[in-house]
Amino acid sequence: MSRAKAVPDMAGLLGAAGFRECPLDYFYDAQVTRRRHAARVALDEVRLSLLGDDEQDRFIAAGSLHVLLWSVGFMVLRLTFTDTGMQRPCDGFRRWFKVMHGLEHDFPVDPAARPCSMWAAEIGGAQIAIRGGVRRFFDAAGGAMHEILHERRVQGTAVTAWAASGDAAMDHAEDLIRRGELRYPQPVTFGSHSELIWRSRQTLPRDPDAWIPELIGSGAEGELIATNVDEPLNRKWWYISEFQSILVDATEERAPDGEVFDTTRAEMIEYIAYRRAGLMAIQRETSSITAERQSVKGARVADWMWLMSALTNDYVLGGWSGTMFARVRHKFLNFEGVRNLFGLEAQVENNIQAFQGRLDAESDRIGVITGVLFGIVAATALVPLGELFVIFVFRLGKKAYANFPDQYPLAFTGVVVGMLAVVGLITWQMLRHANSLRPPKADGVPRLRWRRKPAK
Image (cartoon, rainbow, N blue to C red; front, side, top):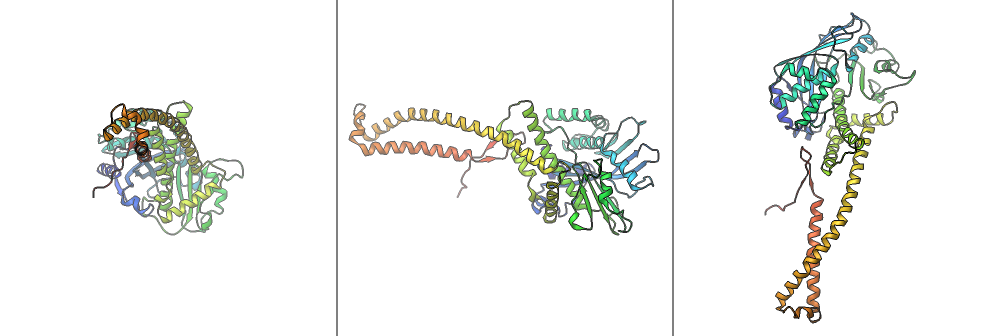
């Protein structure tokens, strides 16, 4: 997470470095697109060479890297490979699909080990070549884009060293945090989204409920470990587990070269990854603070609350995509086979409320103490002030003031009521402005907003 620049500026810098900007279509609400709360750019010609356990399981493919930029400070990376120009084994799809699915995990970096892979791309004028699973490539691409967004020259050897292993990537991320360029060190991965498209319904293997779990992962015999989000449609099968998504369909239509067949569902997985990333970032911070008994400031809690409000706003989605997300929510909430995004939301909300509740209790306690002290000080200060006011207005001497309440009872009452009114007005103004907050700065420092009436 980085808030160095606004979304249009980030898209412009990446565009100058060789990325192309892609339309958001109608997946997001009109305001998101109009005000540039989000943007998507893509880098073409990402090359992959993959060798499985068997010499016959060799893949050579070219794909594209899509990057979704959000104004709240997160970037979502999506690497897309299609069958256009892909060299793959000729065996049944289940075998090579499972081999390629292994890219989600960290492969050994030793070229003699099996399976192994090599990634290659040109980012910001630098040639990037790195071994390992897809996370190694994402770390390299993320490091290169970070340099571009901070208007520094991309050094291919440095980027490769930063992403050479999980530990190296974490060390580099923590260094960026110390320099104030990054907020959260750990990336969050959704997993994979796959499209299995047949050209006719007759060739599509029957009963996907029976063989999809085999592709997604291992579970107990007969246990369904993914839920079919598209079950009500009766034409498509779209299975989602905690970290995997598989779309099964049959159609004679063809997607453009190098593009996914179903852009809406691919964009939905992007959105789920963005939402999960933000929530996991907050969850990790709150968990670390509680586990290590660290102190926490109200500004930090306010930052979490604003961020969570942005992340969990369902109405940033457009009409049809919002309906699809409601279907995802319904399926996840009724499916007990996986942890889900909405359980994470509830956990994060509970964590924030725990901190906020404690802060409120401390604030109330300090408020009572401050009120008592303020009352004592105010009473002490107002007595001589009131005495001077009465002596000046009624032209009394010092000795005559002692008889003022008896000689002028109505005036004495008015003076007392007036002083109480002044104290009450000051207190009311303080309480009114205490309830007016501006969003916290990027560094977490809060700012009070004193409302001013517009000039007439």
